[in-house]
Length: 465
Image (cartoon, rainbow, N blue to C red; front, side):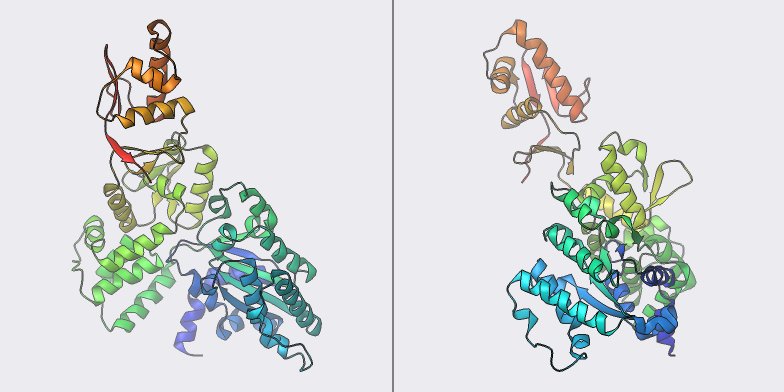
């Protein structure tokens, strides 16, 4: 066996072992990892003969591995999935005999026919090989949650049940379904195939020590350069051993686009690397794969630390729990010794988040369509009542101007101003609105009361589209 093959077996050894163990038990599993974690290359690694020999031994012939990349589909639809899955089965199907019906499955335009064809091919192959288990490795499966109707997941489950669990799925996703499926259909989606969501779920996190050493060696051989042990350690610490970040950071040393010194602090190292376009692109790729709620939570970091107690004051508890579980599973956050306090996995990514925060629009913005409030580029999690949002909308239309109590009362309540009735209720509404947007009563940043005259909205950043 070659050195290259040995490395392929060693790389993410524990993750491969986990997946193979699940398959031996005829169970499906989901792999969750942010973009740049190496999900696609990991699934492709499961196809290699060397890996299968190492982890399946004499059971190797009992599994048929088929790789499906969602990005290669012309469109994310149930029909496209059925077509590609049936096409992947074609070589094994053709081996069963020349008398089988022929035809190009990609030309099928009827979803029902394509589905029946898929079921027929699976049934024929499994009947001919009673000990075989078919394993579909499906990359970028997030699209199935978002773009394909829940019925598709029920069909995948039915295919597995009809095959008596001799069809298994190993899917990769950037986010947990709980964060992806936030539409009314979300519950239906999750209930369509509970095994994938509540069964074997594994996070693809940063690399372990052995994998890091393999990556360091491979990249230095690929670029024909040498890194001192001190610089290597700097890069490992600043990237948190995250696959794509570490690779891009190493590339800056090979191409000499960033000058690092052995005595540089981690903070200085992060500041230097984040200016490199390749490193910045890798951070953006990771960032864009996170859900909105995950991004909003990371904006709350203080010196790379995140407190759950602080989060539950800003976001609904269920959202906090789901997002924290997802960030921990993917290794973006790491638990500290302090209770309910988490650390970001890489100082380099902390620097990127701070950069994102600094480039956000400052001030208060209103999304009139979704009736949402954004403050300093971040979605404010507290929902305003109709009257509270109407108050902000009216004052925003006259941002920076003092609006009289009479004008504001008519705009909000649709009634003529009566001081005996309206002073108290308008003051109460203003105070509630301040509380909802996190404004201070004594020295408000946005919603100002001008004594004896009316109210003024300061710091309005315009309508958010």
